[in-house]
Image (tube, rainbow, N blue to C red):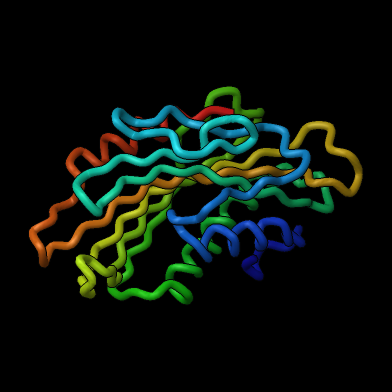
Length: 213
């Protein structure tokens, strides 16, 4: 985590980030945290076929845009522990999480011409505990994929929403902050005539608005 946020260790969060970003949208499974109290899910966009459940609720859907090109929406979770009753713990946790995401794409993900931005979000997940804090982030990066067995430059777009909250009545020494992040992925290859996914931004806004705990 960043060195500016003091009330940590957040080893569970670091583990979750490593698991997600080792595999990206093609990960075979989501993180499952024992004792996680508020299972997040979302309503799949039109035509996005449910592909995975976590904690008994939808965590991934996919929609074919054209042969060999797929829109993906997925949700994942993390948890941590604050050694205090810091009232800003949810805000600190979610801010640190976004910083870790930015650091990963900047330092560890192969690609070039990275553009990363983040901002506070006014999205309020359904049934969110009091004090839940959310942020959104946008990523664009140029990567290389294999299409028809040849390398092709591809533009990858990721839109993310992440929210954190304190766990009410957490037992001593147990995780007392939980977090989810919901991401939507689109990638296209301009060199072979592909264009950005139609209505991607609107689909993302509706996706984020549908999230609930």
